[in-house]
Image 1 (cartoon, rainbow, N blue to C red):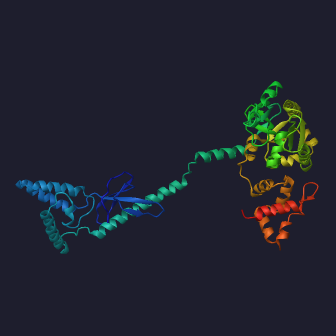
Image 2: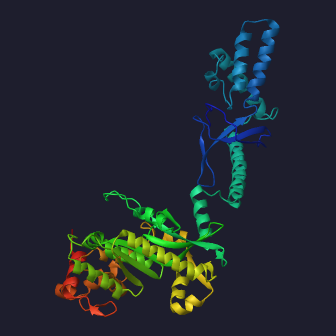
Image 3: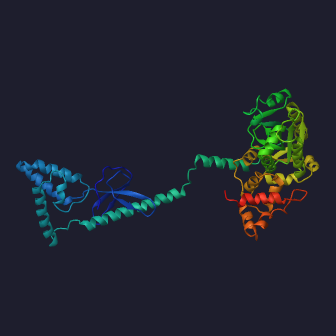
Length: 476
C-alpha cells in the first residue's frame, strides 16, 4: 500500500496505538517523491508519511536468533545475517513472506526459504492457538486509517484556529485602509491657525511644446504671492488653507488658464468641453476661465468671433463659470495676486474657522446665497486629497459619467446637450434600446431632435440627432 520515502521531513508528528497493540509513529509532511497521497476533509491535498517503530518483529526476532547461533558457532553466515538484520531494521514497511524479503540487502535465496519455512511452522502453531497470529495486511490498513483520522482531527483544529485569527493585510490593503480613514477624518481649523497658499499646476511652469519656459513662478515670486507648485488633477490654479499640522482644505475657487491659441486648439480637439465637464464635476462652486490674449489674436486656428462665442456660451450655460480676460501672462499673474489678497481678507482677516466636508455637503452649502455664506463664521471646505483623487482622469467613473465624456467627443455636442441626453437616457444601453423600439430608421434618426437642452431649452436639432444615431448604430 505504501512505498518507501525518498526523504523524511519534520512536520506534524505524534504517536498512536494500532489495533494490534503496537506503537505507531506518524508524521504528516510534503516531502519530494515516493509517498502516497491521502485526501483529507478539506480542499487541501497532503502527503501522509507512515513509519512503524517495528514493522517486522517476527522476522527481526528470527534473524537475531540465527545470528546469535552463527556467532556462537563462528560460522561464515554471520556476516550475511548481520547485514540482512540491519537492512530489515531500516526497512519501514511490513513484509509478509521470505520472498518479499529478497528486495533487501543480505537476503539470498537460502535465507528467504528459511524464513518461509519458519513462517509456515509459526502459522500452524498460531492456528492451533498456541501463538498469537501475526499482523496481516488488513490490520496494517486499519493502522493507517487510524493515523489518518488523527491527522484529520489535528488539521481541522488548525484550520479553525487559522479562521479565528485575523488575516494579515497586504501593503496595498493597508494603504487603502489608511486612505479611507483619512477621508473620514474631520479636519478642524480655528480662526488664525491657517494661511492661504496658491497651488500652481506643474504644467503651468514648464512644457515640452512651449518655445520658452513659462514665467509663472518667476512672476509670482516677484509679486510676493505665497505659492507652491504641484500636480493638479483638475484646473491650473487653486487656493488651499494649510494649518501647522499640514492639513489642507481647498477654498471654493479654481482657475483654468488658457491662451487664445490654446483655447482654439482645445475647441478643435474636444478638450474644451471635456475640461469644462471635469471642472463642473470637481465640486468647487466658483470656476474662473482666465483667458490671455495671444499677441494680436491672429492666426489662432479658429476665427476670434468663434472663440468669444464659445466663452459667452460657457458663461450662459453655467452660472458658476466666470470668464476673465487679460492682455498677457504678467497681467494674469497680477489677477491671481488680487484673488489671493481677496481670499486673505475673506477668510483670514475675517477670523473664519474652517472644517472639512464631503462634496455633497459642499454642494448643499453652495445653495445658499453668497451673502449668507460670507457672513457665516464656520465654513465647510473639501480636503485637497479628496479633490485630487476624485478629479483624477483615471478615477473610477460611473457609466453615466463615461457616457457624458463619450458624447462630448462628437462634433457640435456641448456639455449641456450631452447632459440633456444623459438625463433622458442614463446609459448607452438605454439609448440603443430606445433606437430599437422605433418603428423605422427615419424615426430613430430624429429620436433626439426635439430634446430640450440648456437654460434656454433649445431643441437638440435634427443634424446632431442624426450624427448621434450614426455613431451608435453604425458597425465599425
